[in-house]
Length: 198
Image (cartoon, rainbow, N blue to C red; front, side, top):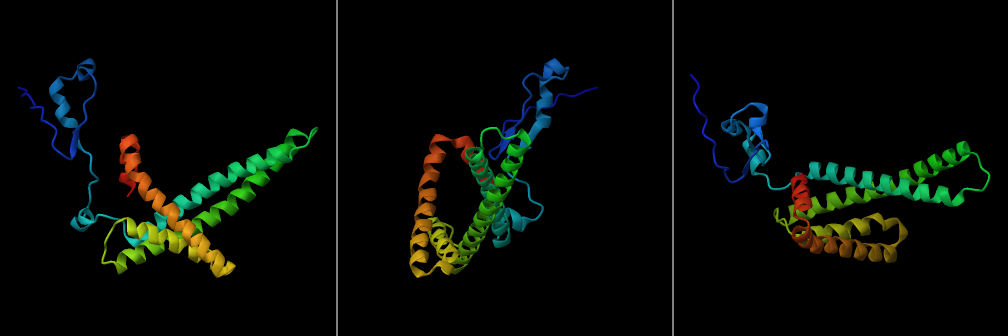
C-alpha cells in the first residue's frame, strides 16, 4: 500500500528543485518533494555558519589565486598579440608556433606574478584594516586596502611612485565598491554567483 507524499511549499532560504515533467519519467508529481534542496551552503560546524566573511587565510588564498589566474590569462593574450605583431613573412608554421608559445609563457608568467603579489598585498591589508576596525566590514576596508596594496607594491621605486600608485589603487578599489550596486541592479544572476564566492 503506497501513500501519497505531500508536495511542500518552498521555505525561505530553500528552493524546490522540480524536474519539468516527472510524469514523463513515470513518476507521480508528488515525488517532487524529494528534491527540496537548500540554496544556502551547509556547514559542518555552527561557528562556520555564523561567519559572515572569509578568514584572513582564506582571503589570502582566494585573492592570490584569482590575481595569479587573471594575470596569467591577460599576459598570455598580450603575448599572443605580441607574437602576432613580430611574425615575419615566409616563416614556417613551426617557428610561428614556437614564438607564440614563448611570448605567451614569458609575458603570462610576468603578469601572473605581478597580479598575484598585488592581490596578496591587498588581502593582507584588508584583513589588517578589518582587524584594526573591530571586524567592521564596509567600503572603507576595501578602499584603504587598495591604496595600501598599491603603495606597498611600489615602495622600491621611491616615495613619489608609491604615493601615485597608492592613490590609483584606492581609486580603483573605490570604483569597484561603487560598481557593485550597479552590477546587482543590471546583472542580478552574476552578482548572486559572485556573492556565493564571498
